[in-house]
Figure 1 (cartoon, rainbow, N blue to C red):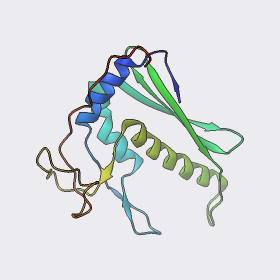
Figure 2: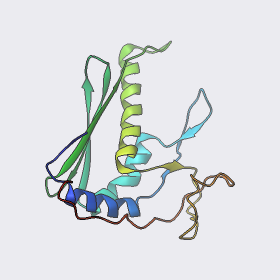
Figure 3: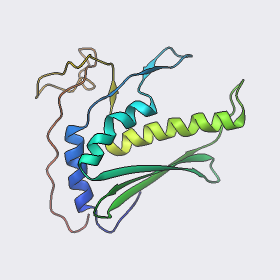
Length: 164
């Protein structure tokens, strides 16, 4: 991970944003596995207003390296602080797709997972707006019931540390 010299302001803003971050709703279906997932658009749509509210921005760039193709994600704060991470994987070919189509699919996949990961987001089935009462175990962790979105959790405590 690459980061600015300090990330004090960014970390505080991200903690507040994560406390308000909604669940990215499953809005797409994998035609081969018949499984539902949150598309890149759903993940971005769920997070952008919260990012803006807390003066955060997330940008992503396609990259290539000896391993293959990938994405660099950079989370920035209005203070100028940032954290950045890269991920790349080998470009594979799929039957019935051109190399360019395979590259596009790979980049979209990596963007979606990287976007959600850097923000600490998760996705879940649409519950038509119903949320669990505060204090309940997040549905993603409760193995006794089917997953459901939960109310926002409070931000983690911030410790003053000069070694950000």
